[in-house]
Image (cartoon, rainbow, N blue to C red; front, side):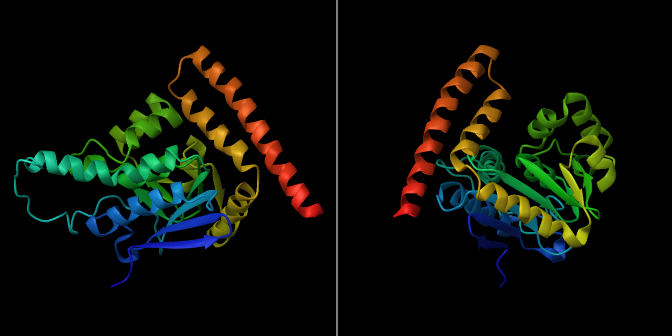
Length: 261
């Protein structure tokens, strides 16, 4: 059986590929668990300094696979509870993919090589940057199944675009072309399909080869700015400025000394 999540390392860049191309990389139990595990491993692996997530074939992720394996029948128990409790716990565990992409102290990039919909927009929104090919599209799609949204989609897109645009995306659920999504600020950069991978990895390697300590504290600051009070954010920036510059200086000094020797 083919692996549903592929891992490729290029120096400090880790490329994580959703690998169900026949289903536009739709999410079922065969892929959601391995994907969350892959993100946890990337987050703790010190050799990884930038993470790129993408999809195999002609799509990024079409959301949940309604025809796929949903985890089988549920048996109520004292430890696990009933269907609702177990369903919540299972989905919340799978959603660690989005949390880790957002919170790991390394830059993360969604390389969107085609349609993204449903839970896929949560995964894309969790990343720091979103680079799309011209064939990419964007669709919330949760209304198609009468769902409220998952994988952090409502949180991320409200933070990225503001509540007004986020509500437009969710309630109207209009399919956007790559150009339309780029104009709304959904996609960070837009490339021709044939150079998307090359251009994305060029940026990923630049980040991986850059000041890792600086990027680490930069991301901590940016994440804190989403929710923290004004003065608390200033305190955080002041503290992290000292930590990041001192740490980076120590690393650069050690590298110069090693080179001289």
